Image 1 (cartoon, helix red, strand yellow):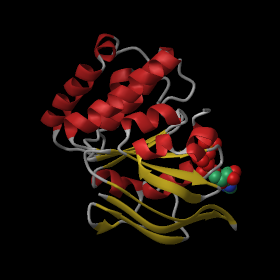
Image 2: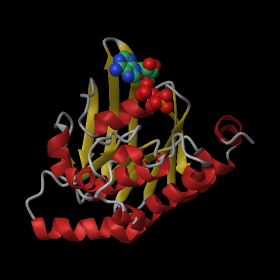
Image 3: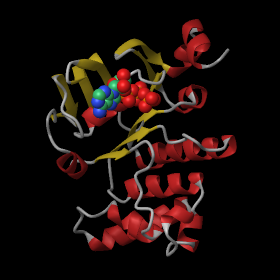
Image 4: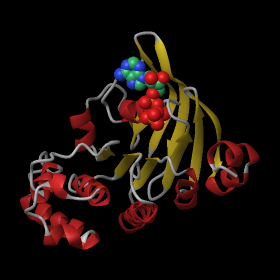
Length: 235
Ligand code: ATP
């Protein structure tokens, strides 16, 4: 569903992503693991059109999408839930959620999707008129995921969804992502600092180091790999 070939991102000569090729299938979770500064966010930003790769090709759903802008990619069904969530802190939960649907004209289905978000996160229904900044980190992550659902994507990109959250909430957030992929048949590319949990819910994984993919394979194999265990799982 998502195919990258030889993607390179540089910031005025500093290479952050170096010749990366990877694929992510529909209805499955693919995870990208790597240390701080490995280039994961830069790669995600290139996929969702926020930065333009210097070289390489990105294909989404069979079409070349390299160089397309973020709005066009959202229209084509790609949703990026960014690191730090990017909510509107002084807007209500409901308006934050609806902002995810701003490119849609199918009003009736937007309402159905809002119900779907509330089905996943009942607490957001109960407090939908409160402003986003008054919610806990975990609840704000729910709003960010909910806003993603509102764009009715076929593919989600999650950048560090569990950052700064308490361990119990981390599992809850990652379980919701797994449920989304399963229930809705969506593809997911997940960058997650908790490599252990990420490899648990993903079917395929890639390891990134200094801008390059150094290992890839079924997540069960990566989890058992001694290099991954030592560098990323703390074992
Ligand atoms: P983290 O987990 O810390 O977010 P990451 O794996 O997502 O790390 P990136 O944020 O993509 O890595 O950063 C990769 C490299 O590119 C780093 O050396 C970083 O300093 C550099 N970099 C990132 N954004 C920019 C920018 N806008 N301008 C210049 N250099 C940048």
